Length: 161
Image 1: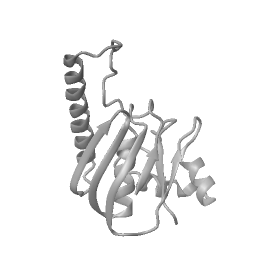
Image 2: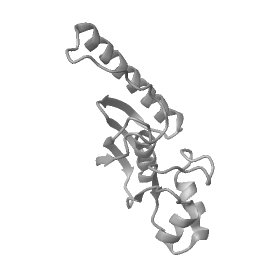
Image 3: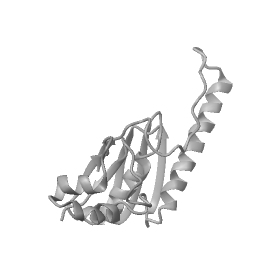
């Protein structure tokens, strides 16, 4: 459990950008902001559920640019995939992980994709063998749909061999 940092302006475009805000928010502005926050929480929870990762008691809250996620998963891999799914959303800078794992196992490394990176290049760096890129691809499914479609700022899960 802990706090994971992400690039706030990189990732899936799940939310619309907020318009300019007046210096003195009115009661209507505050109410609209609360409605928007609830909508973002609903979208984030829906995104997490769409990953088909079984989570008992899934709860997602969103405050500012931080997502807090609660629940229980069976494996460390499921926990890490859930954190990455929520963190790789445009507008999210941090994920506060409150997820419990039933069967603890070693944590994977997280890697921030840089311009010019490929899964092969990352595999060479971590495993000493570029042909081990399918390990990284499989570890990041269903978030990754194609091994050639990664982008700078995206966080990937790099499992231990």
